[in-house]
Image 1 (spheres, rainbow, N blue to C red):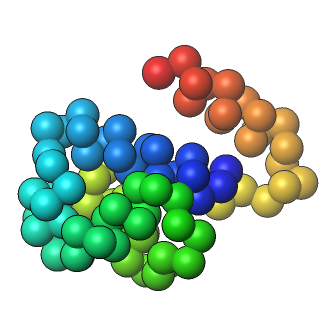
Image 2: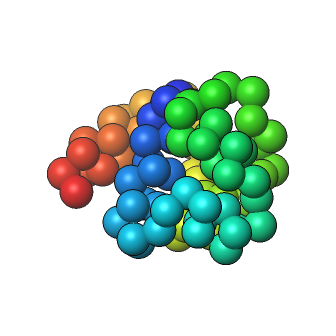
Length: 82
């Protein structure tokens, strides 16, 4: 997963909840510029803020070691079905 993919997930989640960037930023207590940067996959956004936004939009972050590549592939295949 890369920053662009994370940004796309954030944007989809926000839109699925019927929120504008300004509304979501206000609700999450972050700036609209930060949210825009995150949604556009800017690689230098602050990790703690990014995690806060993900959690606030109902997204869960899971870190899996690359040695578990079968598990990662399984998760990716099933995420694409949604």
